[in-house]
Image (cartoon, rainbow, N blue to C red; front, side, top):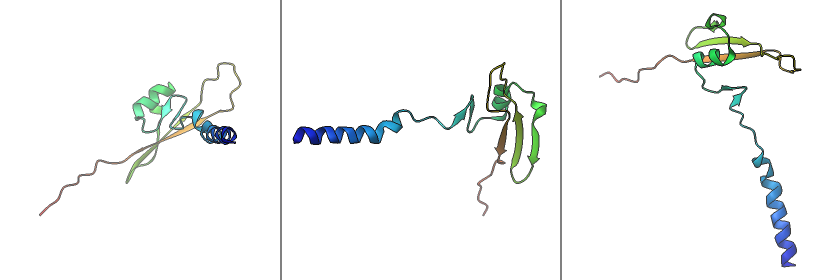
Length: 97
């Protein structure tokens, strides 16, 4: 009886924690990461800095980089990746009296 309860408990724990063992890191994709700088994204894509298009200027600058991955003869379901880069202006937090 005690042995069956122990096995059942162990099986339940394994089933509950199994998805955590193979969880993917969703903060990066093909070398691109969240909070990546503009120059690092351009370098990772292998594109020229002139291919960046500014979409919006104020209050924050939004830029778009359309990247077409190099498939090198293999089938790839991804045809184009649009990276949107957001830059907020530096905010001064000073107090005037």
